[in-house]
Length: 208
Image (cartoon, rainbow, N blue to C red; front, side, top):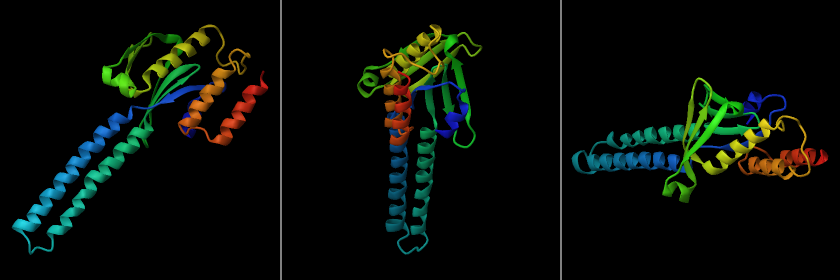
């Protein structure tokens, strides 16, 4: 969260944050589990049938560390990848130690295309294509979690920006529930502590 905060402008506010769907991580977990199980079976057969007297064969079980370490790497990479909507832009962050950041100004977003299969609707994931007027042209987010909320947050933020409501540091009574819901969403994702949520909520209410 501290890295993300360093990317924000002075009055820029986070609207929504999500990641790739957990199904992506589950597929990697299953693949590494099958690999680990295969290693266990192979080593056990070699030890019990072909080399029962060998004292070195059991050491081959240490090879199980390889899929486990690879799985840990997958989890860390999955956690480090984020899709963020602020009241100014859309940001994609990836990388663990070396960070790669791609952002698109909401002003340059021409359209947002959502592709969601039947299973994607059931499990709440999908692909988003952000069509922009920048040189990149199209930004594609694959297997992103909560894609409908991401698209809605993006379009709402773009609408507010076009009407000069973004980055002003204040809200009307009609709009006051929007920021509080956004703060609550960040708290649910673990990006804000309960104390930070209450502090920022109090600041929003104080602007009424």
